[in-house]
Figure (cartoon, rainbow, N blue to C red):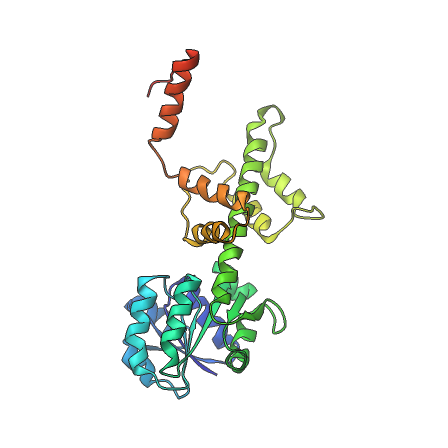
Amino acid sequence: MQIAMIGLGRMGANMAQRLMRGGHKVVGYDPADAARAALEQKGAESAASLEQLVAKLKAPRVIWLMVPAGAITDSTITGLVPLLAAGDTIIDGGNSNYLDTQRRAASMTQRQIQYVDSGTSGGVWGLAEGYSLMIGGDVAVVESLRPIFETLAPAPNQGWGRVGPVGSGHYTKMIHNGIEYGMMQAYAEGFAILQHKSEFNLDLHQVAEIWRYGSVVRSWLLDLTSDALQKNPTMKGIAPYVADSGEGRWTVAEAIELGVPAPVITLSLLERLRSRDKDSFTDKLLAAMRNQFGGHAIKEE
C-alpha cells in the first residue's frame, strides 16, 4: 500500500521505515528540511508541502498523522482536508484526546473522508519491536487498512486490533498511559527505598536483573529500568523533574467523571506535578505549621 506520513519526528520516521521494510510505499512530509532529507536517505519519497504530498498519492489516499496532540493536529487537518476527496482516509496515530478525535471525525462525515484513530505505543523501540496499536474506526475501513497495521505491529496477529468506534483507540491509549504512570511510580519508589537502605549497599541493577526473570513484577518497563540503572546507577546529571504528556491528566479526569476510584494513577500524576515545584510553598507552610503547634525546628534555606 501507499501511505503518507505527516510528522517525521523520531517515532514518525521509525514508523515510516518499518512500513517500508514491510513493502509499503511511503511519502513523508515534515516542515523541517532535515527530517525530510533523513527520510529520503532511508529510501522514501518526501514532499515539501501538504499540497505536494497529496499530489504524490494515488486515490484513495491513506494519510497517517504523527504530530503533537491539540492545536497542531487541528491545524494540520485544516490544511489537509481541502486537498482530499471522498474515500480518502486520515489516521491519527498521535496522543489526541478522544473527545477531539470524535469531533474531528464528525466534521469529516459530510466530506465522506474516513477518520481512524490509532493509539500507538512503542516509543523509540517500535522500529525493532513493533508498535502496539489500539484502533478506533468503522469496521470495514479498519479492515481495509489491515496490511498497514499488520506491518507496524509486533506480528500480524499480535499487538493490534480494532477496539471500537472512532475515539475508542485514543481512549484506550489514554488509559494505557494512566496505567503506565502508576507502574513507573511504583518501580521508582521501590528502587528509592532500596537505594536508601545504605547498610546493605544494594546493587540496584543486580536487583532489577533478578526481578526480570521469574518474578511477578517482571515487565518490559522493568527491562528498561534495569538498563537505565546499569548505565547510570546513581542517576547522576538527571534533574528530578518529570514531565507529563497530558494523558495521565485526562485519565484522572475520566475516572472522576465515571466515579471510578483510581488512587494509584491519580497520585502518580500528582507526584509528577510535585517534581516540578522547585520552591515549594506547600512544604514551607507545612514546616511553619509544625513549628507553630509543636515548636519543631525550621530548617533555613
